[in-house]
Image 1 (tube, rainbow, N blue to C red):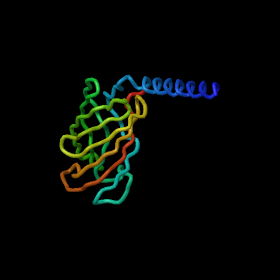
Image 2 (image 1 turned 180 degrees about the horizontal axis):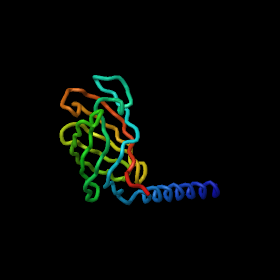
Image 3 (image 1 turned 30 degrees about the vertical axis):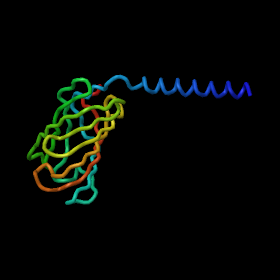
Image 4 (image 1 turned 90 degrees about the vertical axis):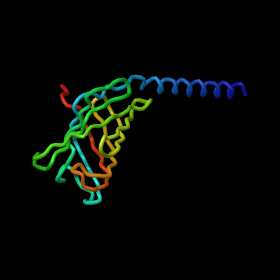
Length: 152
């Protein structure tokens, strides 16, 4: 009985230490400032089937985070037409959650994004939008893998 009690207490202490160490691992707010390049972009909209978004007539090229103050940040999306004939910059604001591994982004004119911050220089955006970048009704979703530019 004594051995069982010690085993239980030891288990509780181990769980407590594991919980404390995991909680302490993500205490630093990630710095998202900079230019983020699209690596992959897949989308589904009401006007198209599931597709590699790079082959669409209009697509996301880059995400720019201009400023960050603590968990709050803002910037713009760089959206281009197929032959780069037209470039649209769409502003956004975002917030990093308390575990510092996810962010929530509201585009000023259209859409909401959820981000998984997978490393200091990579993240994945999950986008929900009602209207396409050219103002046409075209609700849809996309998943975009990003890498920070200028890695040495």
